[in-house]
Length: 376
Length: 248
Image (cartoon, rainbow over all chains, first blue to last red; front, side):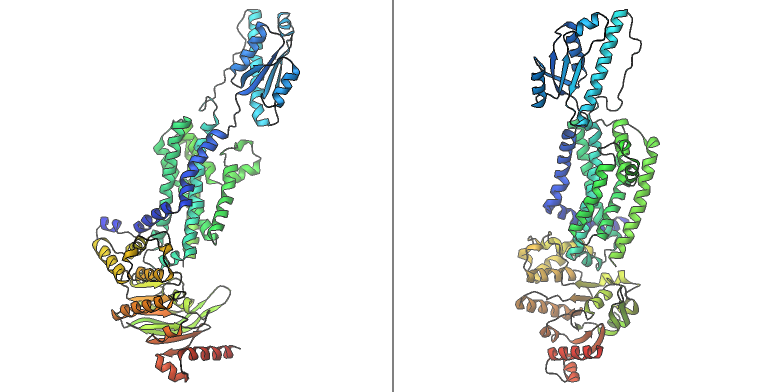
């Protein structure tokens, strides 16, 4: 038998064929695999905004001078504050914040310009609704910076000299500091984890539950074809999901793809293999589909919280960081963001790549061993 | 073709926890026989079949199926046997035709041979009109026929049937046995387990198992004569009573 015939008649193909028919007919799985990328993208791309900009702001300008208007302009120019109106007094200001019409208020006292002209310290106040510290912190920092900058300009004008220090902050890789740029590459990692672990393990456990796994084992299919036929379809689905998310990310969220996309596809292989290992492992532990689902979600939780997908790992306490180091996704996120946002190459990414490869080899070997035992 | 379809010598299976499911079983099944394996629940019927099909590894003893050792040549055996369990092993979300096509391909059938074989099988068992129906929506009797067709699409030398007629109506059972005889007439050896005594009487030879060991073997007439009972059902109950008495 020649090689082509051997390949064409390999017992792996009918598995692949069958698996795709089943995937298409299982509405829940199909919905999870196609709908989830869309929902995740919209949710995480639009809804989760860790950078809070454009706080609705009212102005209580009791000075009504050129200087006070200059200060308002500087504040608005930071992009952190959107002017939604002027208020006449403190009661109106309080009403605006309490009713939610505004989240910030800029108060400029009557003597503001007078003090500047006399060379005294002019006072101004910015009031921020800080009930949610995360949403107020960047606004507060922005306000302070704006005031310093305005102060420097005034002093420079007074002494007819350029400002002594000109500090220019350059936020590389994400100059507009949009969280979608940070989150959307992560969605790829989360989706692949979900498909490879939860959906794959459920599909394998379903075969055992329905007695078809037993039926397959008595056929001449052989363990390698059986396992590959069960795992490869999900790896292919994973690549499709990844491509779709990346395309939508570029089209809708203007995610940069600075680095080499082929390199990203290549370095995805060890991540997919490692995650399939986890999925296969779950299938050997879970007794039924419900258990497989539960194990799957149990595994997803640390992946979402500790891998650096949404919350920065550097901000976590050390034990949480250590747990994060045990998750393949942590390393894969480095690769995803490195290649897509920074354009890093393999030379800078060898560490996460090595870690993923070790995960892939160990997890896959262990789970294949365990799986082989269960089908004896 | 070698002489015997199945030979076991001192075949034993001890599960984790020390349960002896099959205890030193010596059994020979001839080519072309319809052989019935009887015994109450937990007597070791299924364990025996599972060892012969390579689903379980024997703890001790040896066994050959169609001339090949079950431990060393299980891959070869798998190409020559068919297996149908009580659970049928059908994919509910594939159609009748897709199920058949899938198993036929897994058994190595391709191209025109596969297409011809599938059409023939679907015609024979009357599944042709249902070819695009999902297997999950079939009635019990049709599922059973489809499962048999899937297990025999590659025309195996030997067929293992583990309680194939559990839970189907009498008409379907009768039709099923007709198919079994047709297979046997073409030279297929058949090992079947059942709880129905009328089915037991259709077998050429019978073996009775109780608590993992063989307590009776022979043709229906031989067994009736040997145990001096009017029907196989009486033999069954008598043997079980004796064996449980011996155990106590």
